[in-house]
Image (cartoon, rainbow, N blue to C red; front, side, top):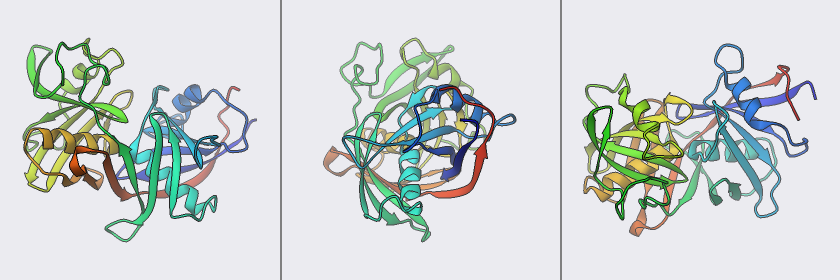
Length: 283
């Protein structure tokens, strides 16, 4: 296979190369992700989304970061759902998508700006070290003083599909420049599988602003799991209630955590362009 059709998609600035592999052979997706996501020699993206058949759900989605590592992705789920609808692969307003972290119920909606969007049940979050995973001798990673590079940061580690170390702080001084400590925290020995780092600032009882450093990617304009983790951490720390609008540089998501059960994420997603990849691939 020399040429692969793809669709470039994005959600709040988090951009992906999406490949419809429903009728394709299995390929070396990690290697392809590295090459296609490269900013200058490839298409350029934060990650690769692969649409596959599922025996457990309507469809299956695999997501690979720009470094080839496989991960979970909230923005990717919304992009995939909107693509499925736009491509005529389903006309149902409700989908079940098999993701790396389980089955995800998705409801097609109109986003606040009137564009196509989706509401995703991201499942029940966890702050237990074993789930993150984190080599920390505590029952729950809430307000944990983490020494990273000689500085101590109060982190709340939250797993919502993908693990995040959430740091609640004022963002005024670094809204345009994410702290260099993010890279140190990502690869901290406490996190054997690395961790995403989300900086969170409370603007009001129903409004948060965040910046996210994604493991395997670096700074991104938006992160769906980061927005979910920020709401959970801010709620546990008494900063917000069960609902908040969470704004990244790329846009705003609505996050709900009713009764501290499952987390729901709502927001837009759209197609940027379609193309064909001829840069080679390994089966």
